[in-house]
Length: 88
Image 1 (cartoon, rainbow, N blue to C red):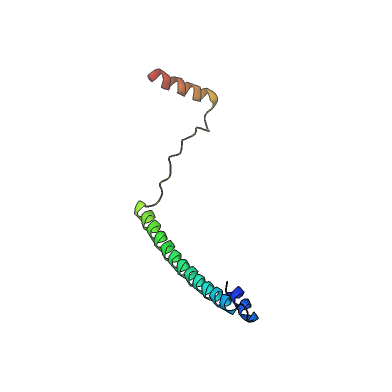
Image 2: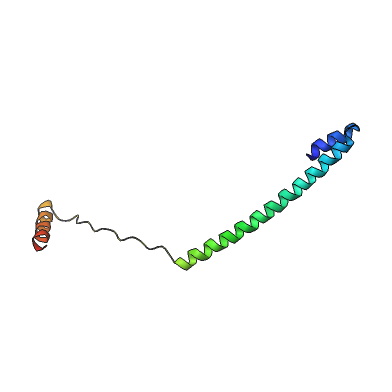
């Protein structure tokens, strides 16, 4: 907007319109800077909250891993399973 205002000012004929566009562009720029500052401040607060929540939880726990019998033969495993089924 400010560039359009400067161009209109340069013609002399559109000076009044150019001045209005220049002022509107400056106001829009200031508002944009304010919103950017406010957004950064909110992001910092959100990040701080997330950090505090993560620290309160503690380190993540590892899920238990199923044990595998890789040294036994198939016959030994079948025998073991039959023994378990007989008991239950």
